[in-house]
Image 1 (cartoon, rainbow over the protein chains, first blue to last red):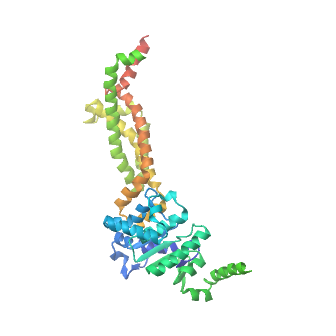
Image 2 (image 1 turned 90 degrees about the vertical axis):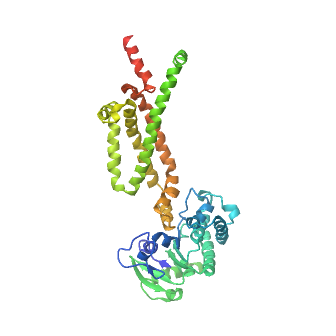
Image 3 (image 1 turned 60 degrees about the vertical axis):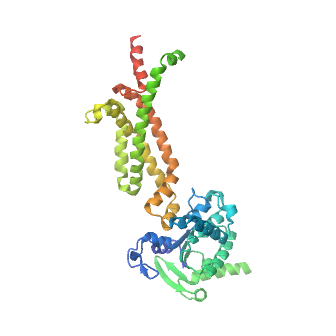
Length: 217
Length: 178
């Protein structure tokens, strides 16, 4: 969980991992190998990527969007079809109803599910998610967060997740990385985070507490 | 008016065929050059101003003057239709290059970014994402170009390349002498 205000470098950090941006200094290692040792196309197909609003291809049906990476990887047609059905069910989109629709014909929450299904399709061991639930209404967001938490427990993948929403970080994160002005301020377990006296963390915790108190009163 | 079409039907057919040949060939050449050039510009934007501006300069040269300018060129100047097709191609290029560039540049940034992040190669990005999404804009450019060329091609008659412009030029002496 990368947590921090806008412009703190969360998205940049994410893009360094799949080499969308080159590192200006230092070295990025994925699975212990420096990026220079990876074939960049192989690296990216090894890493699922989900962003706000999905970034779906508007000229592809939901099915083709989800099938993208498996087809790039030349899976045979049967295996692609089976896998697309499987991940679409996994994210709560019955293929019979949604497979042939275009992104413009479904809701924002459904697009987000498609984006997640696309990221999961080739079963990559690593997932990068950049505020995937950011543009959704609060009800849909909390529903998707819950579902994603269950998925995460089942799938057991390495997930790097960018958010500026503290409760999302607490709900979904195993570790919370607090960033500010391009630097890591600290790395915390959710419990440590809540109890931390650090100046970089306290405002977040106070903000969550204030909301919680308002709700109780 | 009706008599004109009946009496001149053979001439009309021949000249229309000539006209179509001039326009069709010029358009095919302009598409074959313009689309790849537009794609090139999206990959190397430093060239954009040079290419679009020099093409803009060509557009400002009157078509008769351009025929004159091209006349001394070795292979081109030898036949009127070659000359006409070359000039028409040069005029037809700009909207095609420009729309190809704008169409591809107009693809949503998150869509392009997602495509790259999913591991599409440069070629896959172009053929599976950029060209399909830019196709409306590119086709619009080709359409504008075609309309322009159909009109311009009438002037090819002035240098003896034929086409429906023959009728226009044939009419001048008649107006002047009566």
